Image (cartoon, rainbow, N blue to C red; front, side, top):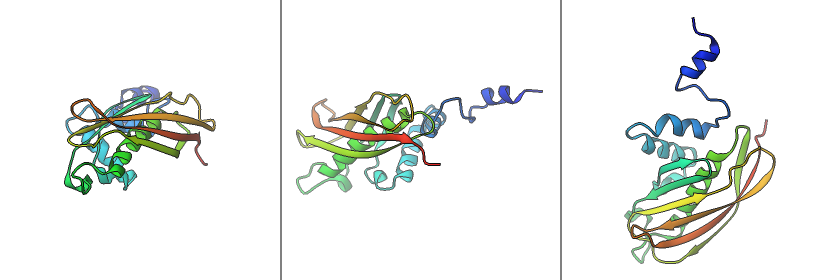
Length: 171
């Protein structure tokens, strides 16, 4: 008969030591066909406004997140380019998913500030990438996360900076 410890280590659904819920969801879903799509839908379900731009997380690891958004009529403005707030939302998704994925268990984060600079009109498939220094503890602290949005030609469309406040979960 297997011990409880052996069962935990052989069960792919079991939480691994030091893993937060977002890390677990990504670990379980991303390797499967359609798994990244389902993970992205989960993000949109957890944060309904975030789901309105229908972005898809395509790469995720501690300290890094890459998210893509397709150019659709529902995210366009009157100038036939992607709306400024849709771009902001895309950058916030990249910074937020990257930060929350990087947090240790027992920590939570909230966006405390955000700035964005628009450099050119966004059209076509857009990719937002963010990088951050992963929090090592759940002590109250601020983190700045830069997110860059590029078009299919690799041109920078917008650069954002998010200020995340990380602290311990409320009991």
